[in-house]
Amino acid sequence: MNMEIGPDDDHVINVTNATKSNDAASSSSVRCCDSKTWYRGNEEALGWALDGMARMITFITAAVFLSTALINVAKRSVGCVTEIPEGSNKAPECLERIYGIRPSSILTTYGTVVGLIVALSLPFVGAVLDHTNHRKALGQMSALLQIIFILILCFLSERNWVFMAVVQVFSAVAGWVHTLAVFAYLPELTNDANLLVKWTANFHFLQYVTLIIFLAAMVAFLYITNYSENDLLSSRIANASSLVLSAPLYAITWTRLMKPRNATSQLQADSNIFTVGFIKVWSTAKFLFRTYRPLMWFFINVSLVEAAQASLAVISLTYMTDTLQMTVIENGISIFVLFIFAAIGTIIGQASIKVMNPIRSNQLCQLMSALATAAAAIILTGPNQQILTYIIAAFWGIGAGWKNTVERFAVTQLIPKNQDSDAEMMGFYLFSSQIFIWCPTLIFTSMNEANVDQRIGVAMLNVFFIGGIFCLCMVGPYEEALIIAHTATISGDDDDDDDDGDD
Image (spheres, rainbow, N blue to C red):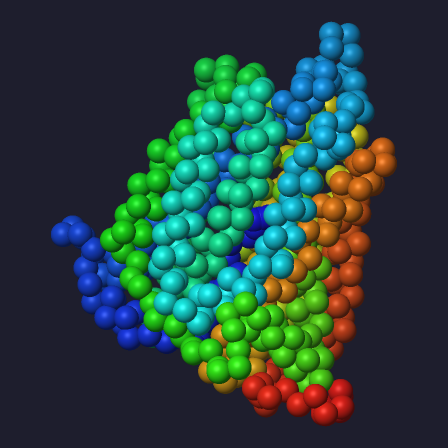
C-alpha cells in the first residue's frame, strides 16, 4: 500500500480514454478456456480480476499476520514482555532498542522506507510503462518476485526476523510496481466506457469478497487450532496459505491472459526514460498552478488525505499491537470490520453524490475520518478495549470507502476534457496520492522514538485530514471548476514566460 497502498491499489478507474493499442481490441474477442464465457470473452479482463484477488490475499497477509509477528518478535529479541503479566492489566512498556530504534517503531519505519521509495520512483516506473514495450514483462517479473518473497517469509523465526523485515520491504515495493503495471491495462480493457465502469465495480467487489473470505478463514482456523497464541506460527501459516492461493492466480494471469503492449507514446529525441516522467510531473504542476487552481487544490487534498489513510493501517496496527496489546486474532477482526464497513462507505458515497456535489461530500467523509481518529486517540488508552476498537475501525472503514468513491468520481469530472490530457491528469492523480505517504509514518516514528505518547502520534493524522478539508474549501464553487474543466487544455510547451497565474 501503504499501501495502500495499500493497499491503496484502486486509483485509476472510470477512465474514458479507451484503447490506445489494437492489441486490447483483439484480445476482447478471445475466449478463455473452453468453459463459460467470463467478461464477454475478454481474457485480459478475467486476468485483471484474478490478479486483483491475488493482490488482496498478499496484502492482508502482510498487513495483519506478518506485521503483528514482527512487532512482537522484535520486542522479545531485546528482552521485553509481550504477554500481560498475571495480576496486571497491561504489559510493561518496551523502551529497549534494536538497531537504534524501538520495537514499536519497526512497522512505521518500514512504512516510511517503502513510502519514500514509491514516491521517488513513481515517475520513472510510469515512464517505463508508457514509453517502452515492457509492460507485460514488468507485470510478470513483479508477480514472480512477490511469490519468491512470500515463500521466503514462510520461514520467519526469532533468529531471522531482521532479514525478513528487509525482505518485506522489497516485497512491498515489488507489489507496488506490480499494481502500477496491472492498472496500466485497466483503461484499455474495452472501448465501452459504461462497460469499463461495470467491470471496475465487479473487480472491486471480487477483491473485497476475497479479502473478507481469506481473513475470516485464517482467523477462524487460528482460533480453532489455538495457533493464534503463537504469532510466528500464525504468520507462517498465513504466508503459506497466501503462497498456495496467490501463486496460481498470478501464473494464470501473466502466462495465459495478459497480452504484451507496445509503447503508448514515443520518447522525443531530447528525452530519456530516466527523466521524462519527472519532467511531465513538473509540467503538469505548472499548468495547474497557472491555469487551473481548483484542480491544483483538489490534488493537494488527495496528497494529504491519502497520506493519512495509507499510513493509518501501519500506525493503527502498531498502536493496537503495542499500546492496546491486541492479539493477532483481534487485529484481524479489526481489519475485517474495517473492510466490511468500507463497502458500506462505498454505498454511502454513491448515494451522497446524488444529493450534493462530490467536493462537499468529500469534506463530510474526511471530517468523519478526522473525528474517528480523534476518538481513537482520546478513548483507546490501553488493553481490553476491543469492542471500542472495532467500532472506531468501522467508522474508519466507512470514511475510506466513502472517500474513495466520491474522490474518483470528482477527478473524472474535474480533469480537462480532452483525450491527450486524460492520461496525463490521471497519472498526476496517482502521483499526488503517493507523494506524501511516507510523511505520517516518519512523524509517528520520530515521536515514538522521543517517547511521546502514541496517542498523540495517532492524533497527528488529523493534521493531514484537516489540511485536506481546507484544500477542498479552496477549490471554490464546484460548478465553476466544471466550467474550467471543459475549457482548459494542457499545452505540451508550458511556456515559462507565461506569468499570468490567474488565467
